[in-house]
Image (tube, rainbow, N blue to C red; front, side, top):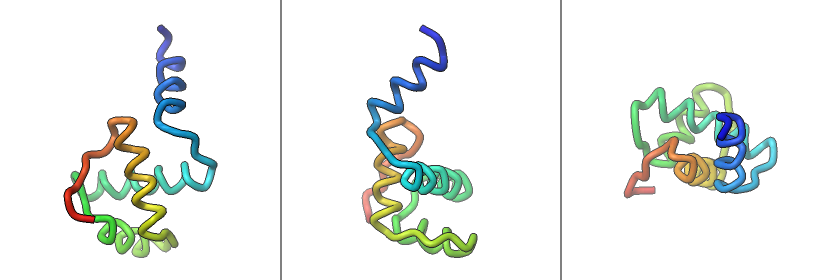
Length: 79
């Protein structure tokens, strides 16, 4: 199966996000890579503010859940 097709199927299986939610997911991924691994939701929100991004804990939680379904983020036990 073609790489693009696999990617599209993985995205469809992970959930249907609108462009704003996808933007938050991209930001969350960036923040997690900056952190070097799992992070608490509130820590990601605080990091986002350092970049001038306005995201809520709920936004970040949803984004990280989406990234986890794609295998791009690990779970952190504390919120």
